[in-house]
Length: 199
Image (cartoon, rainbow, N blue to C red; front, side, top):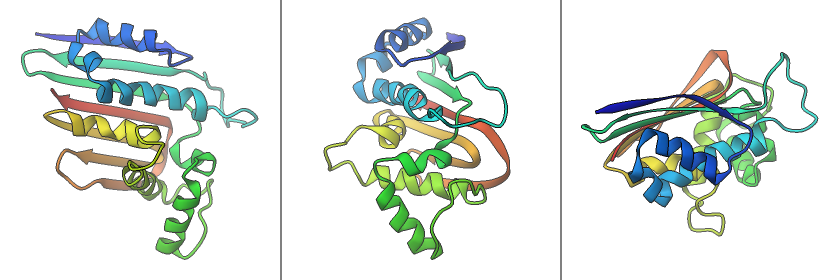
């Protein structure tokens, strides 16, 4: 009743590639749901457009790709999908975000200082703040894009959880629960996003 997908690697987020990977898992529900499908596509698109910025020098050798894996339990109608990149991280790329001016105001209100994109001590808080701004942006013309689209997958299924690990920050949210963030001492080399969904 279950199937696993080996980690697949790619450079772009072409729809055909996402379709292929999800069909390998046999999850027609995700393919037929534009919100779930959009969340996964958005995570891959973010990797292509934000994780590996031109001109940025990484401290160690890296491959500018994304990796995707998944697990499906058809009897339990449960899907777990994981996307990984070894890029600059969500906290590290926030200054290039189109919502950064709002983020900047909220950060300064919290800490009475401007954020330093190279300071890792508040990475979990930075991710949580960015996700909160994404959730409140749904009434505007950029609805369905970016961080909001990544998180929205858990709101369009019976029950879901999302976990994001990026640099020294962690973010967790479960259906019907408030988000949780952690600021860690050890950096994760890039960003790892996992959705655990009950369809």
